[in-house]
Image 1 (cartoon, rainbow, N blue to C red):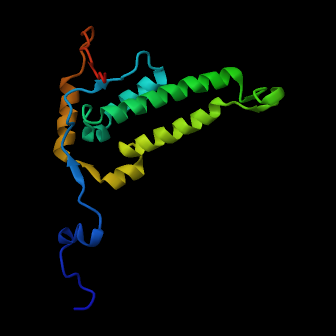
Image 2 (image 1 turned 90 degrees about the vertical axis):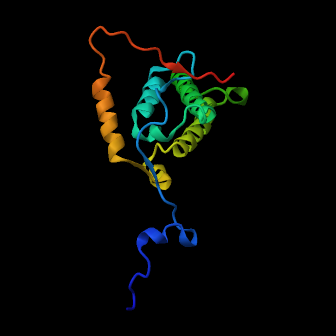
Image 3 (image 1 turned 180 degrees about the vertical axis):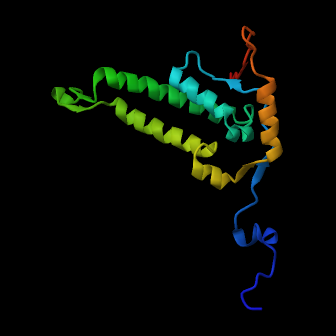
Length: 171
């Protein structure tokens, strides 16, 4: 019969350089999320770090194996936040050129480089919709149920002490 498929779609995966099979995640591969590897992180950086580790995408990240790019990501976000504070204090342009001519703030160039580095690392860790599609990460229903049950069982009682977070040390 002309135009009929000769093989089932499951057998066509990976043929002729096509897309590979996706990775199905049943739960996080880490026992507890690591603490942010910065001395005194900015509040916004801490919120982004915590939100990443609460997301299902973090289930595919190994804090030990991916320690260096995770630190680069946290440090780039921290440095960008500090530079934006300097730019807000000094202004977007000023007398920084020769003979005090008006020029854009030189910190804006470094912010631009940091933005590129952060975007590259976000793609690397699957933090954007296109990178999640490219990585073909899917969450198993069993993993979702286990995650929901874990959240219910580990809710903090009022007045309960918080456990000490795991700290990454790269020295």
